[in-house]
Amino acid sequence: MNRDEFEAVLQDATEEQLTALDEAHWRYMSLIGIVSDVLPAEVVAGDVAKFPEMIKRDDGGLPIFKDADCDEFMVAITGLPREFCTAWKDKDFYELHGESVDDAAASGEFSS
Image (cartoon, rainbow, N blue to C red; front, side):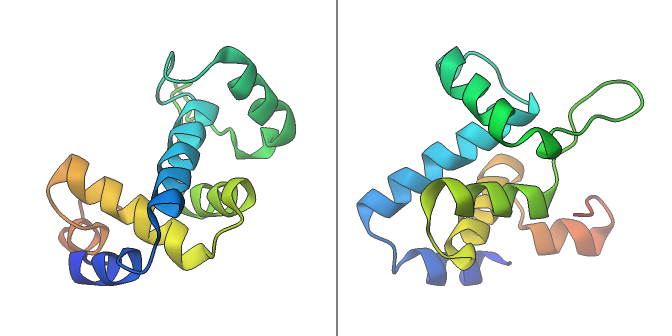
């Protein structure tokens, strides 16, 4: 999704939904091990027990972020439509990298 697309989707979300999306995204990032000490250990442990198939590592043991897994996890946690979850994930990528997932993929910097 490009910036215009994710902004169009998220403009229809309520504040409560945006909060739920943010929390679910942090839970996924914690689940796969990209961040630590963001959430209570018992929340992460519960997610690990419930979603172990989403924890993937490369040959060096580093966490692998998977778009589809992130979307699936966020839908499961929030109960919100996949379109909202994808838009939030892509918004986060944009804020972190200064370009959309589409732009990064087109330049060869990123593949989902």
